[in-house]
Length: 221
Ligand SMILES: [Zn+2]
Ligand SMILES: [Zn+2]
Image (spheres, rainbow, N blue to C red):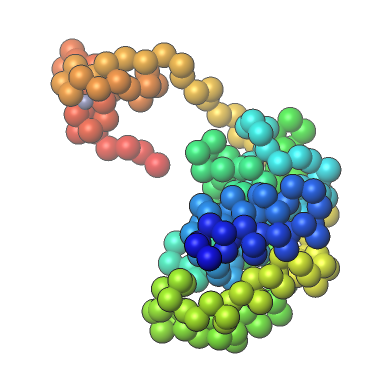
């Protein structure tokens, strides 16, 4: 069985979550590339947050996801699960990492600020760290090189277990959105490299309109 068929087969388990969720999980697996413990947890956490808010998977830019994992985090993969189940993707600029080193996500709706935080139960994380998959990962074995029988059943369990066994949910609260600039639909050409640049990223230096690398200005973050 090739990798795509293998993913499709595993994703069928998500049918218990409702119509279409198997297809979303299949897409998540294809994009993520491997079976692991954290991606399906993010997938479940994001899905539950939407459910609590009575919100649909985001097709436009109407809600955001704030994930509490971080860099150098064993469960960094959590974020990909959140992106797929919520539709709050990196490409749409709808997902931010708070870098708390935790296993939680907040989904907030821009229109009215309604938000909910979903976190993975501590005992679920503790059990995962005792599992054979993470023992191998800790030794530095890449996810696809860990014997797949170590992770297949835990992965399926994470997809099929009831929400109450996996996740804690906050009350619905109001998230304060800060005003943000609108994206620019104007484009200019850099006077040095000749490449196209979104107008709001153009820098003015010594009479020239420049892209950021040609301007040698730093990007402020
Ligand atoms: Zn992963
Ligand atoms: Zn340039």
